[in-house]
Every structure is written in structure tokens, then in C-alpha cells.
Length: 290
Length: 247
Image (tube, each protein chain N blue to C red):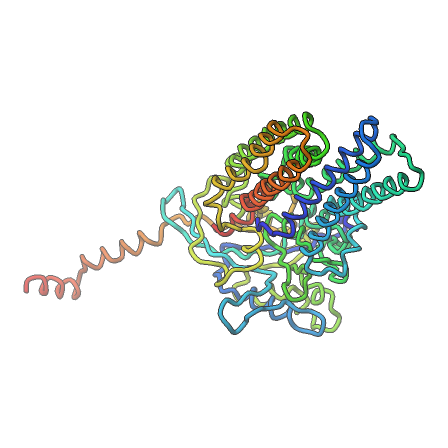
């Protein structure tokens, strides 16, 4: 699949933003966070989520109809994501506003914020996980990975030990995802044979192209460029997202300025991971072009 | 709106005979022409008279060769690919704006361009690559089963079929109601064993394909045997052959 920068930034930044708001929400519910920290970290979450959502807006080819994406929540995960993110961000704003006006917070709002943030990340991940056409995404590991990415990223600035545990879980999930994604196209029922109406094990190959130049389908769904560097990019991603952040957390616990560096490194790592998430994913339409 | 209807009345679709298709791309050209004509419709092209032209098409014809396991010879066939108007169309349910829909009265899957925001998710959800995003208008394009022809009251009755069916020079494409067991397409599906594409995707396509019939005798080896017979010619040719051989 085509790794569009607008979509990668959307999943990375909104995931991080909603991760922050979920952690703030959880700590608010447990009364383990100060009002100042709620304001600072929820505002950061709001900022990153909004940048992510704006980024996804730039992916649209016909932006004027974007508002209509809130209408089909009964069947569409993308529609659910749009509604859920707007709803969640409104609660974040309301929560901050309440602290400013009343000089106190309602801890119960925290659990709503925690759940709604994670539901939003879940709906984002289901946009991809629902697609039977992309076997490497079409399993429950995809939402699990997205949710732990959000929780781990969101916890780095706020907590120490918890973020180490969450990063470790996320790292394991990430390796598991790569392991399963590599094998996802080996086990599936679809082959060039079934794509053309024959049985699974037919010996068929294209001897002439259906069109003389590239087209939308090839650009969007039969993306091949730079897959050859995939293994190297996995190492870079793993180092930046997990190894460096976890080492720095262990060496400089509770150091806020180092945390900013950790976040930067982590997000770069996640960016590479999401680039691979798209670039390595193979769509069933590619069978018609082999 | 993106909830799928039952479509108990009619299931309109195409029956494509891969045994008859000669891969002339006539359906591709006529489809592009019909769906680019008129005031509101367009299937755009970019760089159309320059280097690297790209364009939107609703129908593509692929060319394949398949090893016949019984004769061990390779046989070529042509494969027109377009929207299959699936009963469980994943492209419809993923649509966030309600632009994609399946008509209850005849099962045709359409895009309402006034609602489409061009996110491209429906094209990702389609296993068959039947949807292409038009780069100029920014909205998703797909086969309409020539809804503006089949229900037209202006066109003569014999023209009220999809233009790809009308234009096919070999009659490899047929249009009809797959819900009616007495329709020509249903009878042919029964007689020749019509198949679904990627049945494992559980999309339940309405369009069916008739696969190339197995050729009992390999054309390659029969040409070979003709050549061999000529080397052992009889009669006048045989005399010439023998005479020349002695020279």
C-alpha cells in the first residue's frame, strides 16, 4: 500500500495525542496527577491529535465533503473514528475548561477520557484491521498494536516505570506484528488462480500489461518501491522507538528535558514503523498484476 | 445508507465468457467513451498527449497464460476486470460519507459523487481493484452498469444494455438478471458453470465468469505434426521431394 505521509502523520500524531489524553484521564481518575499537569498534558494531547486530524484531512481528494464523514457510523469505521475523535476532543476541552473555571477536577471524567481516547485509537486501527483485502492488517493484532503505541507514547512524559513497562509490551507487539505480517500472504486462500476464478493452485502468469502506464491502482495498492530496505528500516525504527527511549528512561529517570528527546526519538521510530505498516502491506489486487 | 439492502427483486450484472474474449480492449474503449461523454460525466486523463499519461478507467483487460495441467501446454486467455456489483459489497459499508450505496431495486453499486470526499477507502476495501479515484474531479469512479443506458427511454430498446456488452465484437459479454433463473445469463451460468472471483473474500459477486474450456488437443503439437507430415509427402510432391533429396 502507498505510504502517504498525510496518513502516516495522522496515525502517528493522533495516536500519540490520544495516548496522552488517555494517560491523563487514567491518572485523573486515580487522583494521581496535579491540575497543572492535567492542563499541560491534555493541551499537548489536544495539539497532537488535532495536527494528526488536520493531516488526515489533506489526504482527501475532495475536501469539501469531509463533514459528511460523520454520517455513516452504523457501518463505517472511518465514520466512527471521525465522530469518536471529535467527541473525545470536546471532552478534553471541557475538562480543561472546568479546571480553569472551577479550580478543581472531576475524577470520574478521567475514566471517560481514558476510555474514549482508547476507543478513538481503536476506531482508527479498525479502518485498517477491517480490510480483508490486506491480510497483514486483517487481524486483532493491528488494534492491539495501535492501542499500546498510544499508551506507551502517551506515558513517556508523565510516568517513568509505567512507560518502561508499556514500551516493553509495545516492542514485543511490534516484533510480533512484523513476524505475522511477513507470513500473512503465505497462508491466505487468495492466489492468482482464485483471483481469476480458477482453483487455488493454478500456474498462471500475466504475459502482457493491461495498460501501458501506471494507474491509480498500481500507485495506491501495488506499492513496491523501497521494500528492499524494509529490514534496515525495521532496525532503525526499533532502535528509535524502543531501544533509545528505554535506555534514556533508565539512565535519566524523571528528567523532563530528556523526556522531550525521548518523545522525539520515539515518534521518529513510530513514523518509520507506520511507513513500513503501509509500504510492506500487500493488497489482493496485486494478484491481477503478477 | 451504507447498510447493504437485500435485493430480493433483481440482481443485475454481467456474465463474461473468457473462452470467447479475444482481448481486443473494445469494451475498455467504449466504456471510457460512453462514461466520458455528456455534460456532467467524466473519466479524466492526465498528460493524455504527453509522456506518462494516466487516466481513469472502469474496465481493464488483462492478458494471462495458464499451464494446462493435462496437456502440459501453455494456453493464453484474456480477462476483463470491472466492478462485480457484489451482494456483500465491502466498498459500500466502509464508506464514511454515504456516497457509496447499493440499490435495493436491482443491486447496482453506485457512487453519489456529490457526497464523496475522495478518501479512497472503498478502493482499498475492494479485492478486485474495481474502483479508481479520479485525479481531476477528486471523487471515486466505478462501473455503473451503464445505468443511464439500461433504463433509458430515449435509446432504441436494443441499445438498452451496458455499452461494454453492446460493443463486444465476439459476444463475450452478456447482461441480465442473475436473480431470475430463466434469464439467459442464469441459464448460461448453470449450463457452463459460472464462477465467482475470489470467493474466499466472501463478497458474493453478482457478475459471473465462464472459464476457458479445456482444450483437448494442444494447438502447438498439432502444428508440429502437420510439419512432420509434409516431410513425408506422397504423389507429385513426394516425387519432387525425392528428386530434390537426390540432388
